[in-house]
Amino acid sequence: MTDLLGTVDRAAGTVHLERRLASPASRVWAALTQPGRLGDWLAPVESGAPGPDATFVLRMNGDETARCTVMSWDPPHELRLTWDYTGEPPSELVLRLVPDGDGTLLRLDHTRLDVDVVQYGAGWHVHLGNLAVHLDGRDVGSAGCDGPTFLAAWESLAPRYAATDPAS
Image 1 (cartoon, helix red, strand yellow):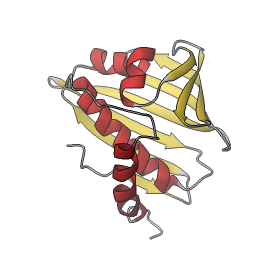
Image 2 (cartoon, rainbow, N blue to C red):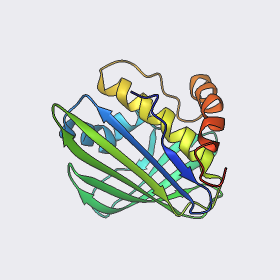
Image 3 (cartoon, helix red, strand yellow):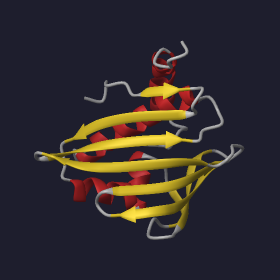
């Protein structure tokens, strides 16, 4: 299921992905919002913690961080963040959870991106694959965006995401 490609639109500055996860929405929400769990599939929380009107910082790799400010907190349905990544203008990340039988449909929309959206499409694809592995109770061995497994997967996906751009 993690092989499903999302879409990117360079002109609009958007990324969209959907994943069906074999866990209830409450469990997915916990993985999206608990600092210790975020580090298992996305990146370690360097400071703060997700919560209503909160700001927290993810250590993505080396000197790069994502400073996240919670704009909407509606458990276990929607998490909307300002995503302020090192060296980039702030963008917006929305994670929506829709109950789907015994599992959950996760919809990710990353918008207002003023960088090449292909890197985000491929990156979120890898991270959501890691989330599925984490929810299955297996060790992801996540090292944020620095790990060799992440980088190899990202490199193989980037050309596929470039091909989803309507302008391609």
